[in-house]
Image (tube, rainbow, N blue to C red; front, side, top):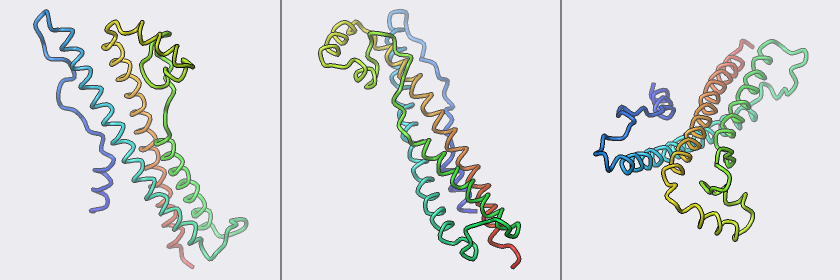
Length: 194
């Protein structure tokens, strides 16, 4: 039961019990309170990316070890399932599902660097800087855009990073289900009657 509870803890997506809205502020400080709240939310969202990556990396390391054991312990050294007993089909189905789990974990940790929602002529993240093409264009955009667009930039980053976190967790969940199904099939193939 210890392994299952550790896995459940590893895969837990934290839920915030606090209401996700800025505290009411006086009429003069509402914009500042909104910006402060948005920045706090951005920090939490970035922390969630790190947690998702850590979970995926730990699972990927474990899956790599597991897959190594699977590959080196093929049943009776047989690599072909043509004309073999039904348990060998279970073995290969388990291998395919386990490889799918590894692929899903790789998709969870792959860098996501595209962001298409940035308004033209604005720089919100490093990809926008790269798309400008040269240092002079960056200098120009930064000089024009230093008019207090901090709230818009923060909202844009929260939106983009939240989508990244969501995708990472989808791939992690898929990998866990594939690995569980693949593991069950592999165990069933290994304990077959000889």
